[in-house]
Length: 482
Image (tube, rainbow, N blue to C red; front, side, top):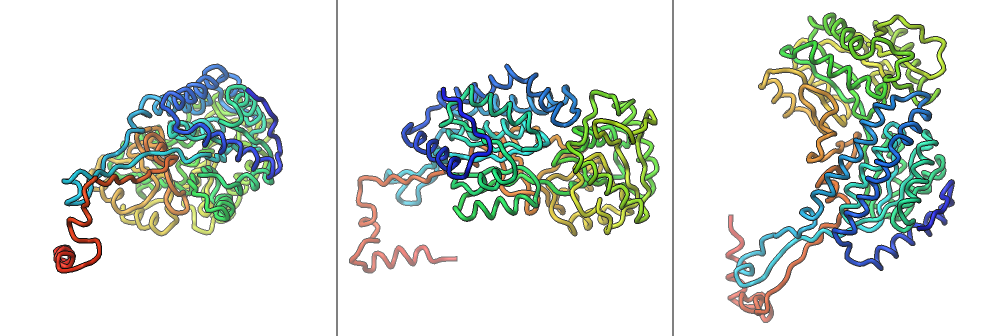
């Protein structure tokens, strides 16, 4: 297998690599289930054999990142989707029968859909889950029979470089190629004439990616984010709710596209919510600064951004409540750790209510009636996720039916993304398209319609070939009815 360096490649060099993959795809012809399965096996092999090294690279890239978390979210979180695709791909590949219109179907004509590989899929993966959001999409890409070019994030350079080396050792460049580099490389990558482009990252960057893809009419799947709300119903078990909510908020220090971005709590339960959240955090993280389970903010720029949100909220009148179980001093530290911080009674002009937080800050808004929460959600851009806690079935139905979000988890947060049989994606500003499981296979496949005509002269028999006459008019009039 060839092992080449793809650091800071020029656009022309990337274009040559893309054309090499496309020609290899054409030369291969029909991609067998065995070939697809074998490529998935090689991807799994990278994760099984080098998971510890990848987790250590992520730990260093973040300043500190929980190795246990990385093994769970990124390593096991990638192996699972790959195994799911390996198990089901032959079933997914089968043609879908469709009904041929009357009377053709009765006389031997047939219709069906075949799933054909798109060709070469580009993947731009982010820094927050750099391994999972690189390997996870490969489940659908490989199951659909495609080849792939990958541009990982420059914010996690050690992880990106290690992935590049591991892919080059396990795959030929005409199967999978990893291109590393900074923003200029990423912009050039997004402009390539892929057969499909998957981008995971910020909405602001997605606008540039989509513009670049549009020049070549490249179809895109955009996995973005937004401000995912939590609606805490009066019927919710408060301690259970905060245990699950704070677990999701503190995972990866809140640096998750699906992290709870703000929570709406009944007015008369806000104080109890704060105390319950304190208990939840203390139970999971009795200390934070030297706790190997608690992750750092990715870099100084994001740390300063989050600190700015806190100061802005405080200056504009919010009550800022830091949850710090061991009363540790976060002012002098090497790794940019930030304690979970509740921002009570936030106003709309605060930055923390205008931007996706992507960190361990949680605004808490009080409400009187659940209709207020629905109106608030609907008055803002549609989020990637929405979370409802409660046992009131009517209220749950009201929230589900009257709000729009990419996905929903009820009585927990984030967990819908872990269900491989559910499509994962956003809506509007939070994303476009979806993948995971069978939906990923279909996203990365061309669903080709096929109609096979019978040997009989059906058109002549029903009178739709010239010269036309009363027989054809009778047929047409039989169709023009209410």
